[in-house]
Length: 160
Image (tube, rainbow, N blue to C red; front, side, top):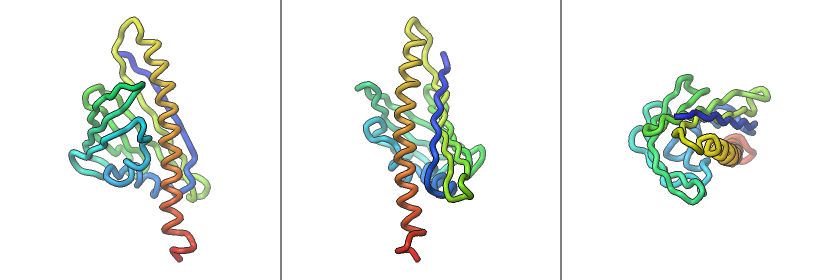
């Protein structure tokens, strides 16, 4: 197996605890931030929020549907959440760091992608990294929109 690394970072216009809470909530939050053209049928098998959660989902990659299962851990609750695909060992980390005096946060999605060795492994890895960069940029955009929406609903003029 060959490992390939991809990482995408974005400033989110909402506080870190709110953004992290959306990422860690696999029943109501996380399904709202995964790009629906790529990720489908996210089902919680066990748990639902943070560490100890087990999920399954489908991922559409270049027209092909791939089924996956992942286990969620929180090596640093409120700051670092990980997803480990049980069949492939692919490991994704969500890092949430406060920014702008706590009014915003920086979120980084990093994946160590494991692909089988073979004659086309290098090309397959480059294409996968290119694809995941776009997917993660979209996911972080959806997170930003969802976190801002929730932040406005709890701290906006209507909430006062």
